[in-house]
Length: 202
Image 1 (cartoon, rainbow, N blue to C red):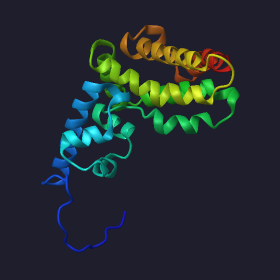
Image 2: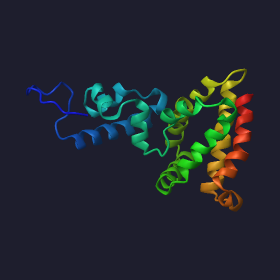
Image 3: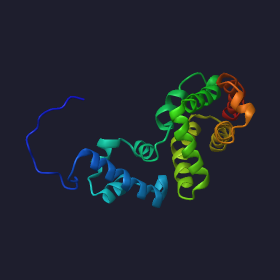
Image 4: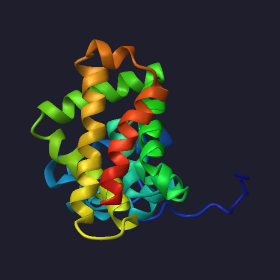
């Protein structure tokens, strides 16, 4: 983005002293506290800004949305709030396979897998992290999938999709079950994708 020279002016109220790096660190530290205390859904950008001692507009400047800030805070390997809308726009009869392929292709990248395993372990075993991840996934993943479905029990069906994908990730990357580890991404996409598709169709 091009930079333009502007006249010197007073520091805006709430804007912290110090450099950009210091400001980002203060915001992230405040976000960790806010998310931990209130959970993902109840935490607000305004509340995080107040903790950090900055104007709320500065959070949007540095991080964008609350989902962006949460992803930065937990170093999330996947951003369903960004990727899922595009996945949902393709052919409906291939949606189950697209969801499974999206997840696996992210986790097959070594650096992303390392971050994902750490995050998943923390989400399963930490009383503070678990509700944070559950809230984030419910709002940014399950809610988006449910909104795209037709028919009854859309929230239940979206949750069943999540359990199928979570089970796959746990079995392949946490428990490292030999048959799952040895299977190719394409094979898993076909097999698990068919089950996911059944949930999506209701």
